[in-house]
Image (cartoon, rainbow, N blue to C red; front, side, top):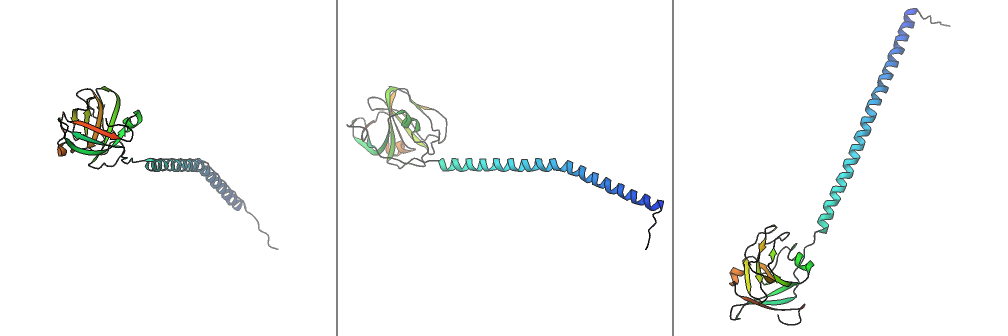
Length: 204
């Protein structure tokens, strides 16, 4: 049998080694205490960022999917005539004769054909004012009084603008057509309009 005799020096070395191991273990435990909260915080930040990204992406997709462009719906025909009631040109019209339709107007439409227009009918004759908010293409805006006579024309209006386009005299009807229409077809102040439509039982 071999007996190992531990000298005091050996005992000191073993004690020192144990002390180093214990210190290392304490340092490791301390490091874990420091890094564990940091890792948790990073993990929470990543989760929050992911949730926000998904929310933003879904909102963008919803806005895109909810974008709705309106299309022209023929509801009548309107004729521009000169001062002695000779016909100048006839167009198809969509009629806006209630608050919702008048407020919507030609907003959120990508285009309109040359021989198309929108007729706005108001409940009473007064000074009117239009703007181009959410209107994607330029228009000629024609204001007409109760005698069906054109009193104001705003040509080549600015799309997507909040600029006001007012009538210079009281009006009860407004016709919107493509920009340049009045110049191309020589529509002028003093000309008149007559129309018939599916919302109206007689010629107005």
